[in-house]
Image (cartoon, rainbow, N blue to C red; front, side, top):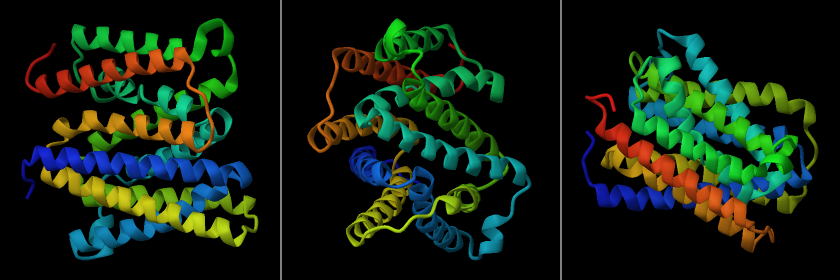
Length: 292
């Protein structure tokens, strides 16, 4: 049963975002020297094993965990997430952690904007204004007229769109399936998809890089386990705004470890995007029973 320990939930969410940021840094390092799809494939092998173990623990058997009345949508969710991770890691290589996460931070705005056409949910005028302001922040990051047409600048935005669709489909399948079932299909479908894509790009890794890969897999499993615990002890709406700390932690890793730079437009745009995103999250929480 879910408790309502918001303070502990915030602490766990903060730790979770830090671990995910470390995971992003490790992914960036490995994907610089090895094919992105291979790196994501190996990550997914360990993630799928974790997912299957958790699903079996929660439901009693793998068959029970896999039972769903909407398999095509569940498979689509898994494919979307696996593809989104590949695209985002590619963004880390092309743009770095700072700019990639600054653009990716717009995904809650995309969820709010797409919730109407995808799920038929109402979005009030205040949230539409926040969405518009947030996308002004994205344009500031992309520097219209300079980088906005560069393919590399669009990569994390594509990842954000994919992750937003994944989030919306997750909300849709939750009407009929349990969280354990959705978690199971996320890992298994993603592992199959990433293997079919990545196995063709297999290349030998050095011993030290295998050690880094092992740490990467451990951070992935640990981060998802902590995220599960976070939502078990606190309401999602109360802790979700703190997920933006991943932008802070990932940017710090980019600046300190990878010697990236923080341009003024990226900093300003990120602040606008995060502020707009937090506002939409708060309004969404308050507006569950009324259109705003």
